[in-house]
Length: 130
Image (cartoon, rainbow, N blue to C red; front, side):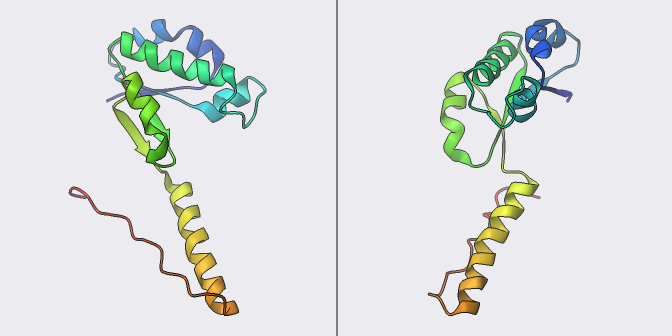
């Protein structure tokens, strides 16, 4: 499987031609890099960025390619599912580690300072075969 990232305005503008290249199977929009390329660093919900993401997803579906979306958690999945997205990355290494350290660090800090006891962080649920 070959996947590409869309991170520049020119890529969105030429996406149909790019997705016409044989053997490209999947496309993912990179909102952080795209926003930086527009001079809108960190503004992933800026209307121009959101429009480009929607265009990327719609173009991929129209061209028979699989759009893929990265989410921090499942709470943001519904609008993408409604657009027809079926491929997701939920969480990524830095986010997973950050959440673990934040939860466990806060719990340990509370225990060390005598604050209210904190329940241990929930462990990830194992599904499928790894």
